[in-house]
Image (tube, rainbow, N blue to C red; front, side, top):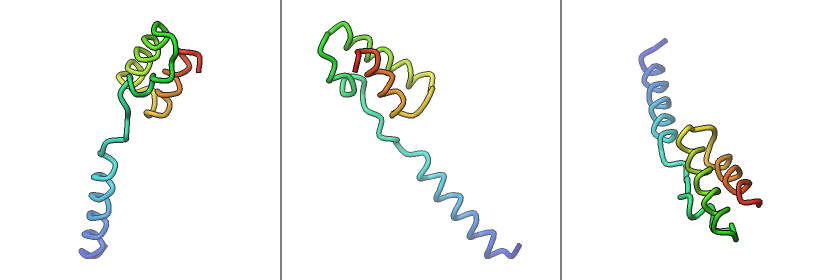
Length: 73
């Protein structure tokens, strides 16, 4: 491989790594669980959401779905 090709591949890989390491737009548990009517269920939603993010069982979309499912939405 020519040096220019190696430099191009390195620059492309570096750009992808910078873009991939940014914030994924995850919301706070209180923002996600605002739709819960019942305060007890809201607590369950927040706990489920936070636990999901902490163990990284998925992206923020999956954790949002799990949290809202905990309060019946």
